[in-house]
Length: 313
Image 1 (cartoon, helix red, strand yellow):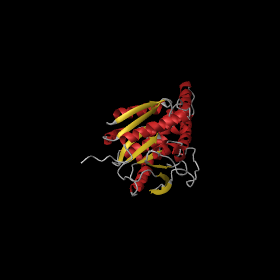
Image 2 (cartoon, one colour; image 1 turned 60 degrees about the vertical axis):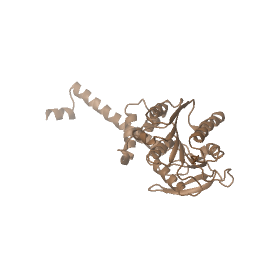
Image 3 (tube, rainbow, N blue to C red; image 1 turned 60 degrees about the horizontal axis):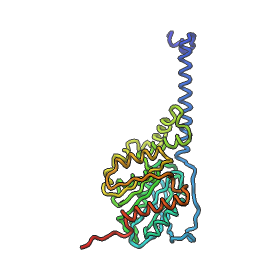
Image 4 (cartoon, rainbow, N blue to C red; image 1 turned 90 degrees about the horizontal axis):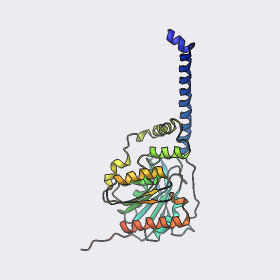
């Protein structure tokens, strides 16, 4: 009883000090939780970027393709036809980006007879909802590929993926489970969505605050509780055996570059790695963008030609 009374009405200096420490700790945790909650909201509901484009006047004869994603609703993508019966490259935009920012890369691929397809992930561009930083975005990508594979004007067994950060995670997650994917370009890919959460906190300048990074990760994990047992993508990399994969690392994004390099080291052959000065295709300068497009197109031409090469009898 004496101890309880002392804690309720501290009279000794060490009890007062203990109560002060406990109070500071309590308010620190409370403040960290509040900041983490705000950060998670900002992360899963990013500022949306959407480019309004008239499909009638846009070159390349694009076609709007609708598809449904269970529990997420309707999506519409832009299909740019190449040579009939050719391979299809699906471009997966990055975090806080949209399909409209990839149209020059689309044109470069279409100019080389590829079919190309772009769409907006949840919480990006024209699509509502919240982002899961790749968990459910891979489901969106799978539904898009299934719809495309039902067409009769493309090679239904030969797809290539290009993706940047969020899009790269979704592309890799789907490719590890889909034998129709024959070539991959993964720009700034990460192993687990929580790593992207950490990058987001650090980019907000709050990574040095006590408990903030971990509190934000825990909040994100709570929101995505259904994926708590999902293994890191690196654990399934052996499934890519035989799939040509190009890993791109940007020097101006060292956190993701380091993760991408580790993913490259764990990936099976055939694999390639390239380091570039600047990442984020949508914000590259025009000369850098042309060089980047040439690199991506050359990779696909070499490892996933538009028309399959038939073996001689």
